[in-house]
Length: 377
Image 1 (tube, rainbow, N blue to C red):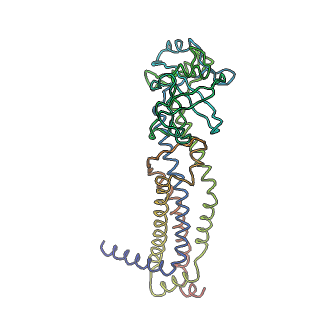
Image 2 (tube, rainbow, N blue to C red):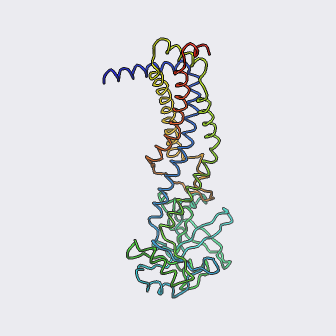
Image 3 (cartoon, one colour):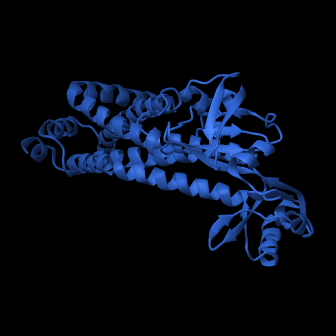
């Protein structure tokens, strides 16, 4: 056992010396390899963190949302719908929601007006942190909007939502129900949609299907469906970015193919000398395996650490506009680091295994050839 360990340490020492003799070439390979790992790891880390943030936000959303549809468009829920919904078996805690969008010509951005239990009193509003930051607003200030009736209405800012909620509240404007109905000319008794929970969460889909059957002009949106939609969206954007990086992946493939297509004259001569002085083919293959593994792992660690710093400490500036989306009121939030073992293993296998195999193939060919012919070639 001890002799085997000492043998591997001796081979490792020889491998390090061999790598040092071709320093410039190996540093170039290391840089290209690390850059490829950095790009791919940045995409996977950023997408995984965004998925977690989206899941955390959606965890607090209603279990089922009911919308009324007219000619395929979202329409107001009329009076009486709430009572009809409450009579369906399994439905509980039915709540009428009031929310809508307002386009601000100053910022060329949409605000989300909403009525909540924590909404301020009449004539006052609570605004999101991104809106406050871009408009230069603070608690106690005044913000005016032109209502849907054409009247200019001024609201006093009662509070600014905390920074920790910015992912969900960047463009939010909380108002009282009276101000909301007056501002948007909403009829009394009508709601934007209805939210409810189900007595047995496992039967949410069954209850939603029964609801749509009893109310043909209704559409039910389940929380699980929203989670799957966001997951599909992030998967699509991740695939889009990886497709943009396909050129880098192709370049790496060419590099690996070039490595597998043959050794340099200096490397072939070195293998021939080692065979001539009595080295076994297995030992030569172990040296080249150590060489590939050391180069791969060094590049992988450098690239992955750089990707981690780029995503979770540098704000993922290279990927943010594509994977987060585009908006005028852009939320600022800190991503929670997420390390997925399967993603890490997949990336390791996609990058290290092909390169190491590409190193061993030409080495085995040279090591199994007559040493004299190898040194002459």
